[in-house]
Image (tube, rainbow, N blue to C red):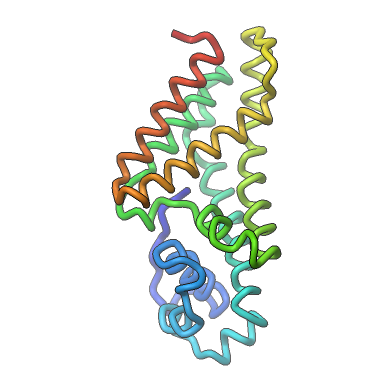
Length: 206
């Protein structure tokens, strides 16, 4: 997902600053290790301001997952991979774009929704569901191009555009886990290289 844009504490209202702080700190430390004090300090707000906007830390977790979905939707909608006229070229350009934005520190390029979902899926269902809306909502944006590529190339194999769209996200999220486990962003980029090869194989592109 996109790298965060650091903003000074003076910019935006308290709620927005808290969401930006949560986006960055949770990707770096995880949800459990992120305290309300951490968030208030990074956002330069009081605890009173925090609890004015969020009834609890879990409520903040839901809100930041939704915030992530909103801001990344704009980021991906404006991305260059939509430009090619050929639908398969757009799908492959998407994979290349995801590889190209694996830059900087691991916390700067990994997915907030994926990080949260892995940590809280069994303990905080409201946050888990918000993460699901983010991940599957983004997944859905790939389906039209994949289906158009299937029709364009007469692919009649027993897989669907929806299943391949989900698989792309499984590879991307798995690549992020490998990058974290190995402390090496190259492991995530390697996963995207294999995804590119796999998609070309499905579409019989040499």
